[in-house]
Length: 229
Image 1 (tube, rainbow, N blue to C red):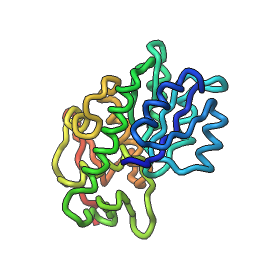
Image 2 (image 1 turned 30 degrees about the horizontal axis):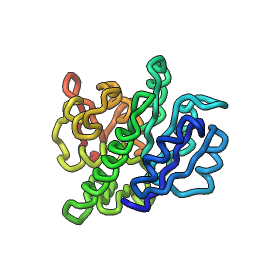
Image 3 (image 1 turned 135 degrees about the horizontal axis):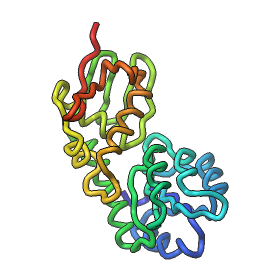
Image 4 (image 1 turned 60 degrees about the horizontal axis):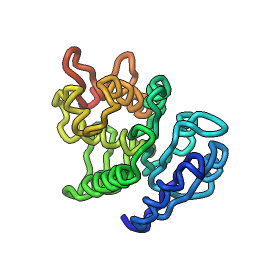
């Protein structure tokens, strides 16, 4: 975990105390004071976590989320009380975590540590792969392949798919998926599960109007089944 690289996007002066707290944990922190700088950094630098303030001098932070998302990158959005609509848009664009700004530096440090702990847990289970039809889910490499092509998923999308795939055929209520995939995030509600299932279906080529892989069980939740042959 030490030596990991974090991208902190926000006003340089206002976010200085956050960068100092994160650097104090042994992480390398890359600052970006605007959306434009963040996009440049996303092209030039490798990083594992992006902390995105929703209020940037040149654009809204949620507009930057898709630009900094890469396989293996988790995003933490810092939102202000009046940013309700931006939060909804941010969820749709795939932010992984949400925190209320101004955020206590120690609280942010604790959240980043939690992100790294969850990654370690995903990779510490029994070695092997899960196969569902032509879908291959490699829990050790945190990688998904469909046929001969790799499917690029965000960390949160991978965790949702992995949770469903561990028990194919089992119906997971939305609130159970929230607890297992999102934990105790105060900003997240059951609609978020619907958004992420839709994102998974699109990326996996599972027809959303007649899904064969991730099925909706009306009134309950979702289950993953083997495609019909």
